[in-house]
Image 1: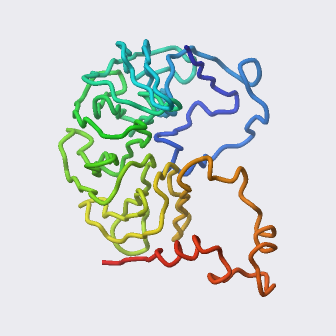
Image 2: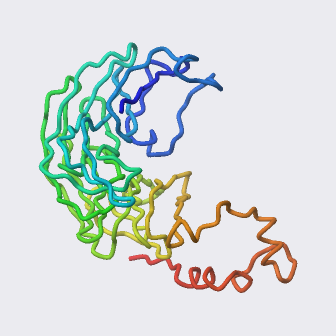
Length: 323
C-alpha cells in the first residue's frame, strides 16, 4: 500500500507547522483563502507517493517531515495486529515547494510490538524546532536529525506494554523534548535535552494505564509553564522545567486520545469511554433533547440530582486536588 501527500494551492510556502496539530496541538493556523474543495486533481500544487503511516506531516523552513512504515508482513488476531516481517521504519523529508524527497532515514527496529488494526507502527508525529526534527517509534524510541538528515542522537526506550500500540507524539518546550509514554504498566513522562538527548527529568506514573493523547503547554498568569497531560481516569499538570506534579483532576475516561486545547486561562479536555463501542450511542443527544428527558422541574437547567445515576457518581468522583 502506498499513500499520497498533497500540497494545497492555498498553503503558503513560508508556513510553519512544527508539531502534531500545529501550535500547541491546537489545530489552529493563521491562514486565509483556503480552498473549499481539494483533492489529487483540484487545488493541488504537487503530489508525492509515500509508504503508509498515520503520523501527521510537520513543516519548517521549506521542508516537510513525516514518518512511515514500509514492507510489513502482518498477522492479525481479531483487532490486534503484529508485524511478523521486516517492515522498515522511515523518517522522510520532502521539499515543501516541489514535493521532491530530500532524504529518508531508517530507524532501528529491535522488536515488533502489537498494535490495534486501525493503528500503525508509525503513528506518532514528528516535532521540529526549525534546526532539528525529532521522531518517536514505539518499536525503538527517540531519534533526532538535523535538517539535512544527519543523525544527532538516539535514545532507545521500551519495550512498552501497550496492546494497541502508540499514538502520542513528542513536543518541544524551550530546550526540552517531552514525551508521554503511558502503557498498561510502567507509565512515565520524560523530558530530554533536545540538543544532546540526555534525560533532564523523568516522572513515573504508576497510577496510569494506557493512553494515546499528546500533552500541551499551559502558561498561567503567575507561576511556571505547565504540561497538561491527559491519562487514564486522570488529568495531571506538571511543571515543565522540573516535572513536579502541580495539580490533578479525577473522573476522566480510560483511553484519552485527543489533545487538550488551551484558550486564555481555560483548559478544555475531551474524554470519552463507556467500556466498549457496543454500549456507546451512535450520536450524542442535543442539550434540548437532554432537557426533555432529564429536566424534572422544567427550569431548563440540569442539576446533579436530575442526572442518571452513573453520571451522578461520576460527578461525585470528580475532584480537583491542589498541592
